[in-house]
Image (cartoon, rainbow, N blue to C red):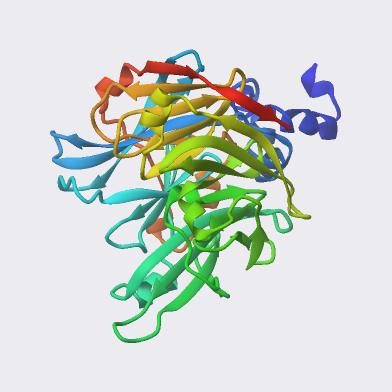
Length: 415
């Protein structure tokens, strides 16, 4: 019956289904498999489908049998009632041939839909895109910036976006480098995923933020909060240039550390955690309602003046903030608790992890992107690899998260 529909109608129906449903449809028939695996359908699906945000835990573990460091990505779910259960499947790959705990050999630079960018902390030119849902790893070609300035790079950044004009996925690399006693220089390059060469573009006029909670991918572009300015700097992947985006939350440079940039319900958003005498007392969520006109609206203003909660939550540092299915969460990478703000009932749940090791909680959305569609003929280093199974590397975390305490919030204003 389904295949009796006109092809254009069938494609429109399929393009509005979530990724999980599409993955099931792939197994129904070869005809449906060919439709949903077509690269043009994958791009159409990104435009039409609002995916529910999902959660992934990231930790580095030691594999005694290989004496190596293994990066582990594991899907987790949280229903808001106080339990977070580890979903089926764990995705892992080797990131170092020898055990080295500090500093970690790799870090996650950004998340674009279901793609995680791992960057080598010792050699920034070595980057991988990881699709844990399909078990794929794609090594990116080394950009010219890292080739020229390996010994000079002070700081570098990566980002990813979608060019809806050319229907291509693009990677942005930015570096700030120089030699002692000389002016600092910046350079930027863009890679069209699936090709083997980077193109130079005009670099940003200022330093970007390395904090993951000060950057976000939304509306097809990449965005960074800028310290000391009431602006966001954005990279337009269609025009391939940087531009300024004003926002209403920051009034002074002191507020920078209380601001978090994220994607919230499909739009660019800012979470502003106001403070009083160094303690966080209020949470405002600003959403960019009209991306072209740069029009913001404050969707939520939440009072968290509860002594117990403020004492636990208000002094956190190195905090990341992102979205989950029913709200937002705050996670300190160096500490165990994760704070889940449930916007359905306006409660803040303090969740503790079963493991004592630092674990990062990442938000992502499903998509049909397959890294095998972006292999190129430049060389074997750019071919996709399969994620390996190293057994259950984080057994304690496999038992899930437990509710430490629930706080009912008050004085909530919703626009």
